Length: 274
Ligand SMILES: [Zn+2]
Image 1: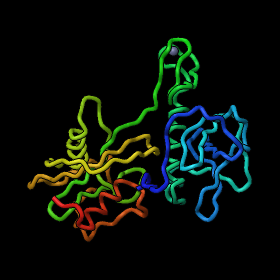
Image 2 (image 1 turned 90 degrees about the vertical axis):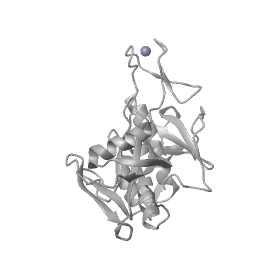
Image 3 (image 1 turned 45 degrees about the vertical axis):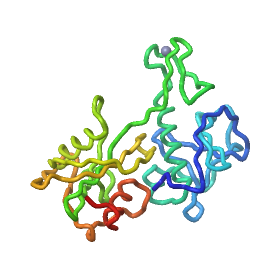
């Protein structure tokens, strides 16, 4: 999965580091596209020498490499570099840097959505003690936002419930959805499966989680079982396909970055059963 970069490690401890020439700089445009070069499928990033120090904020470290975010107004220009969406990054590049870009995107999105105080309207300041934006006028503190969402592997005998979204990602997926205020994750699972496919589930159990910066999510994976008499009744606004598919017929996604794909693969390889 995207976060499985062992023995490398992403260290998200907050620091007030000032950028130096060799540090890596992530630059996203106003639409959230990352500015990067491409050397045989590996991303090449801007560095500290390409911009002014005051136009950057420290994000995290990947092993001994420190990553900063560009927050200046001018567009840095480097020959051979181009802008890529996070989805294009997912399809085109590989390696631990993809996880760094997704995580950087999550933080860029949060910083770009939180420039002014929601209570009093003053320009927010970068907090110097923790990852937060603070208001010099009213003291409001805004922390990074992470959206909880579930991914659900619904099992019926020797089959798994596969879906395809009506819009966006084209490959096979599982039932997924955001947690609403006032419900537990298990309740989200039961509600989303019912809403999207009309199926009642039981024996809901946790599998694994995944940070998914592309959508500012923390994804929480669960397996569960469909009630014996359940019949698929698809929500056509959300999905264009929803069927129980036998293990051997499950077609996986083109790469192994997503928790969804891992959950489909684990079932296909008979490492998960009811
Ligand atoms: Zn304020």
